[in-house]
Length: 71
Image 1 (cartoon, rainbow, N blue to C red):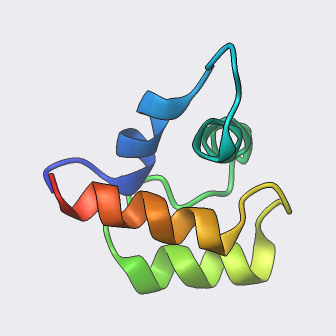
Image 2 (tube, rainbow, N blue to C red; image 1 turned 30 degrees about the vertical axis):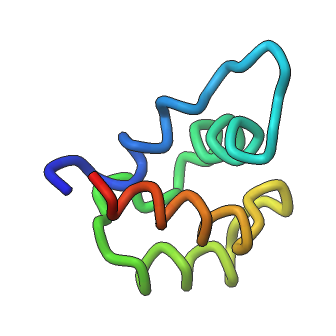
């Protein structure tokens, strides 16, 4: 995990046929208060539960996190 979760998730942005991951990534990109340098599950999860846009669902984050930690 050399890069932050934010930078990992950016790879899902801009799909022509949007899915949950791409919608999450697009909303995350537009959210200027997202913890962009975070590599910590708890910090990001807390942010999503307390302050994130409804498109950034915690269930989608959990799936994306599983992909992220496999790197």
